[in-house]
Image 1 (cartoon, rainbow, N blue to C red):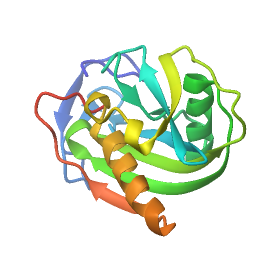
Image 2 (cartoon, rainbow, N blue to C red):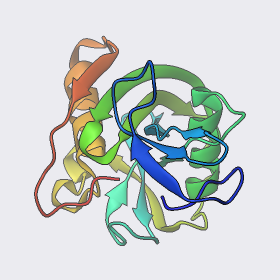
Image 3 (cartoon, rainbow, N blue to C red):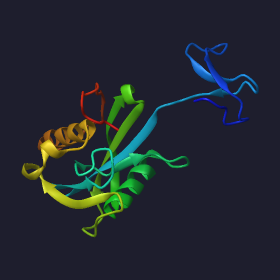
Length: 183
């Protein structure tokens, strides 16, 4: 950051009084520009014993499979963001959303949150950000072609938890993987 979004003057990095870390601060209007993590919200849409995956039409990881998810927008709840992303990427409607996995990714300043959800019906299609949308049984999951570690881990948890029909909310830290985009 070079300029203040409030007044347009140059900013410098310093530790504001009462704070404990470097922030961008405007020397003219003294506005402190906080930079906070982004939240990615998504769904694990289920129909019977199958899960819905989308093959990405955009970077990062174009052509790889993912759960429908994306950045949360201002003015929406986590659940609304997850539902919206599912509708945008897979033209699918979900119901009975239940918080399922939360991943801390401080190395990319993100938090990923996935909800288990039931597909409302089988009326889904390729959305603008997808090349393909498909239901997969566990044995058909393209594990080596999954886009992100958070998707892989959510699916691993789901198939393990499905055996006992018990789905605890999981919160995990995922360290960086070298050579693999994680956003």
